[in-house]
Image 1 (cartoon, one colour):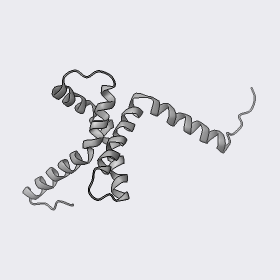
Image 2 (image 1 turned 180 degrees about the horizontal axis):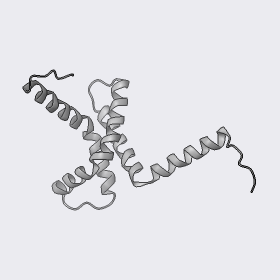
Image 3 (image 1 turned 90 degrees about the vertical axis):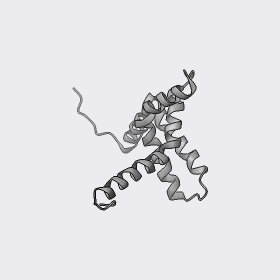
Image 4 (image 1 turned 90 degrees about the horizontal axis):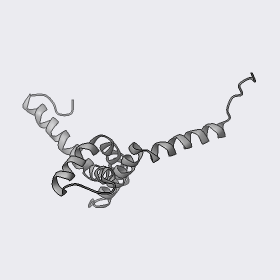
Length: 123
């Protein structure tokens, strides 16, 4: 049995890039990219475009698409009927597009609930 040789930095980078490409080609990666695209479009539609807000919108869109795509798919099918084609991608894009608005809505509800209970909203 030959001795194990430590892999070089270039091999580790190649392995990492291959793992990223494999994840992106999968269902979760495609949903994440659709959400990132939705977050980017949401940022482009904003009145004031700051780079920081764009980064937050893109990350929030990607995260929302990972977790809210199934719910968004149900909502889209209720509104438009049975979807054909890449319905999961459309749901991911819609979740990414609505991600910042949904996040603000949820945080507003938490703040309002904290105020009603007598606590501080930013605790």
